[in-house]
Image (cartoon, rainbow, N blue to C red):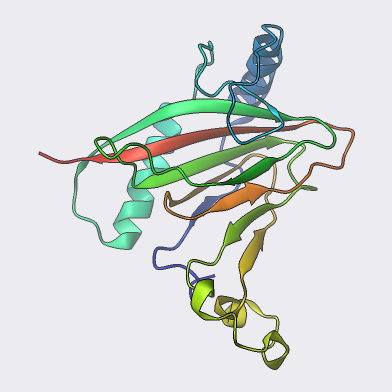
Length: 197
């Protein structure tokens, strides 16, 4: 993976305490009773994006992980905003189409994040290789299918774990493959904007 993206991912397993984890799942189930209409975004799952919802998202926990991530990146201390939280609830045969988390020109995001809550280990999150447009002429049979050689492939399949956080560059195109399980898949997504003076 380190050879595929200019900025590495930040991955934190067992991200939330059991109490916070269970409360988030319960709160999303309660919020589902509001029967949100599909907001017209690129997904077939139930989602709270662009809609009013009442979830107490784990802002402090994400902030702590973001600080560790930027320290590893070598970024100097800076102001940032973790914002635009929404949940996604995937039932069988739903998914999410290709998209990024860029935001608007005036209020552009630098990073995006996902908290994988429940039912996530059977459905992949797939990232497109930003360099692959120049590699179509290469015979893919020439390369070993290992992480070290992954920069020769058009996409990278990420297999999440329940109660895991990832943070990644908001410019990366990604999508959620069709959820095949009867058990619902629940995630929380958010964006991170670096504040500049």
